[in-house]
Image (tube, rainbow, N blue to C red; front, side):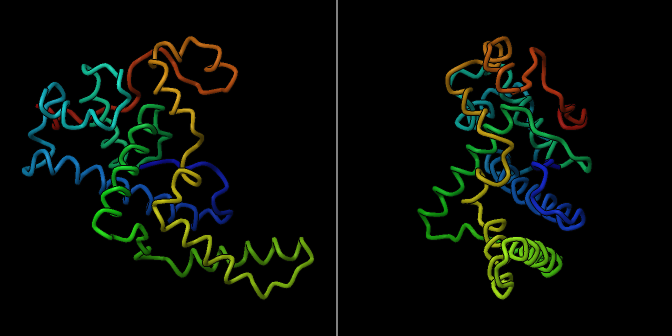
Length: 213
């Protein structure tokens, strides 16, 4: 599953709940894309399947090597499916941003809401957000009467995919992939000066062998 930027919610349990909720939502979007290509499931997709590579290439930078697209997309799926938390690679953040943009465009086209309420533990998360908002208002010397409304607004943002780029991405460094290849960026001054952390090596996430046997 995805590891989100620190400090989204101070309470660890609430933060874990939100991380799981977000990962599952992105996971369903990725799975929908895969199922549109292969209704029978991911087990029948090969990493070197040229038709699959072409199908998902719209979610990658224009110059991204086609020979890496299949493995990288399936690697992102594997990350989302994993129980452990991982910070996504830069190109995976690019894929995630592309998928979200595509999802929003489709939702707008058919009049679908981009808000999806949390099905479990919503009240617990809201209660923790209320406590945080009370603490903030207290520090500001303001009335705590508005804490509930502030907390509900924060939770609404968590549940609205339109807000994800501002909340759930570590930064927007992935946009550099529109200009540079991963290799160029890994040896550039941008990589060191901005602390992007891109390394000149392959993907970090292992795709289960049974997926491509």
